[in-house]
Length: 331
Ligand SMILES: [Zn+2]
Ligand SMILES: [Zn+2]
Image 1: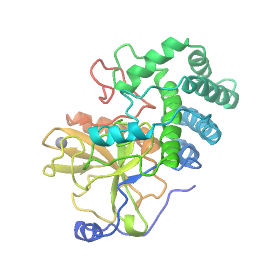
Image 2: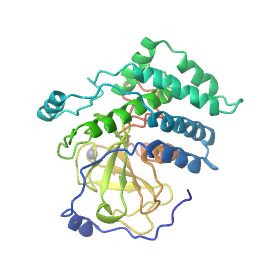
Image 3: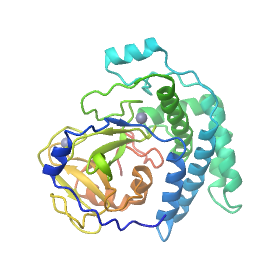
């Protein structure tokens, strides 16, 4: 994959509103055959010449292993019709991380995933000892770390091990979501513009604007855990829902609030009402953007907006920072 120079221009808000009449899918589930493989490719593409080169390449190896394990994931218990009805009635996500009973298979699949990554990491890679340490963690320690990670609690979370444990949780939940969709008709309900994942209840990592056909210009939030994407209005804060005081900042240049043809592929959408931000990635500027990979590679944008006193909404489970309040906050 090479960086795209797609000549398609941005649509203005009027055009996007006209398209609201078209059938816009409220929820786009991850494609098991490509989701992790494409992320691995994107990480390698972004790693070239990047200050975080080694880290991005190590994660690419982990994503390759996620891809391979997902193609043959063991059967795990899926939600029953009763659980689907209950979730619909309660308004809670069906596979909510806060109360879904994780099948122990997630741990054996995590260890297998990390074993495969270890086979591919160079012999002199400093990441090897960390990967082996997670493989060797006792079951109860793994479960404790997983609980903290999923709840966004960084107190007593092993920050170095967290991305590796998160990779196993992403693998399990991505399988769970896609297998549930295959086994049931319309298992996932869509509350009106949720700011947490309608499938698993996790925070988004970033948002993405689409290209091609009826999705052109439509914006989706991307789940940090299961990679589901759900529709969300443009120019609206994902944290507090405000449509006023929304601005965009990018590394290359300070972009205009209105869409423009030269818009950067990754921007921070900041909100003056609640002083939070979420990154927004534009496929029209680069068709290969991946919310999770591109978020990691634009850490300097986080530093830029946190200098201006904006706090991050959302999280990237593959790179957390020590904080006793929330996994979502950067230093
Ligand atoms: Zn999710
Ligand atoms: Zn806000």
